[in-house]
Amino acid sequence: MKKYFFLALLLFCFGANTPTEARVYLDINAPTFVQIPIILPKWKAVDRTPPTLTAKVYEILGHDLTLSGFFKVIGQPQLPSHLKEREGIPSLTSLPEYTANGGEILLAGEALLNANLNLILKFHLFDLVEQTHLVGKQYEGSLQVLRKMVHRMADEVVLQLTGERGVHNTKIAFVRLQGKGKEIFISDFDGAEIKQLTQNRSFNISPAWSPDGKQIAFTSYLRRNPDLYLIDSDGKNFGRLTTFPGLNAAPAWSPDGKKIALMMGLQGKSDIYLIDANGNNPRRLTTGHGNEASPTWSPDGKQIAFVSDRSGSPQIYIMGANGSKVARLTYEGAYNTNPSWSPKGDRIVFCGRAEGRYDIFTMRVDGSGLQRLTSNSGSNESPCWSPDGRYIAFSSNRLGGSRIFVMNANGLNQRALTSAKGGESSPAWSIRLE
Figure 1 (cartoon, rainbow, N blue to C red):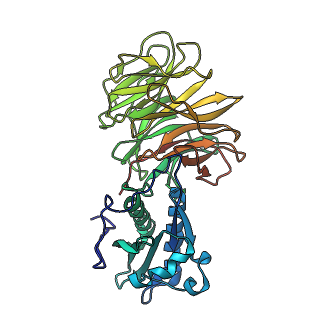
Figure 2 (figure 1 turned 30 degrees about the vertical axis):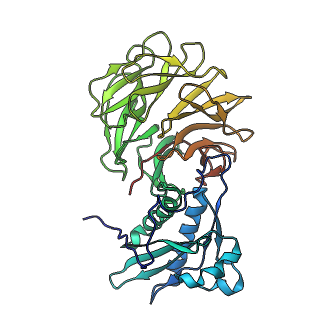
Figure 3 (figure 1 turned 135 degrees about the vertical axis):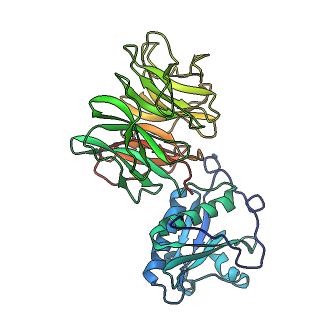
């Protein structure tokens, strides 16, 4: 039995719009996008529910909405005195009291810790411009999954106002320097709940999530040779996947989860190979005299972008999933690497050297439409996409040591995900896990 569950119930009889019927705002990465002002009044602690518990829910929810980039959160401290202590879910007739505070949306709720010590969260979403009720839902689960419940709630708010769920219930895997080695860690979307997956005191690098979000493939020097390993996302079932001599690195799962593309050194140089998901049946895709690295799949599984120095310097190339029709994509800059294909299929993000340091760029899949997303902020490397294509995670040393950062796909709203002193790199974003 799952240790938690969610119930989605319509609580009022006002009727609720589906996401397609709700007010749909501009895409977060559109040039004209303006954040949605959302009022978040005090949550109500029902019956004997500890107020500290409700305050925790309120804190996580406000943080989620802010990090999403969609909202300008107007919290309890910003409300006028007569609304500061107003708590719980208002009636439709009281909505006009909130309209003078600059908000367009109102998100109100309450929390109940029942006799079984399960937490019940209720929220209601109101359109203050139209003075209408949009949706009301209820979630129930154990206290151990409080964060997941609140993340699910934030995802639902994003869905109702944009037509697509948020990514608050996703995780990011990354590499962290640990003693004399490097280990694989994971965290929530907001950088909380950081957990160490590997603890072998070796060099573990290049994590890659399986398409179902259950496993992470990575390269480890545990047995001296750089081999591919697998580990479950909860840290269990650690095991070696490949035993081929030489380099086995930079794994990338095919969208259907049946194959893994990687760089291998079976021919005395690094080439892009395909292996089955069980580690067998290696097939060489690239030929020639250059070194090839960092494969990334198109969302439809028909193409692979990769790095090659066949032209004399590392550049981004594209080919069919069978190795056919190789074409060069990048011509600007003498060093371009670490490509990652957007889940929407329209752009590729990569790392390029510019003005003596590394920055993050995106381009269309034909190499046109080059955009620089970072500049004058240290070196920025190892970009990857969120599963909805709205955000990009990357590593940056702008704060003195390499940390994991997140930004909107257009380069706005750049913020540090982790607060460690440094030594973090190679972020990889999971699918939505709920």
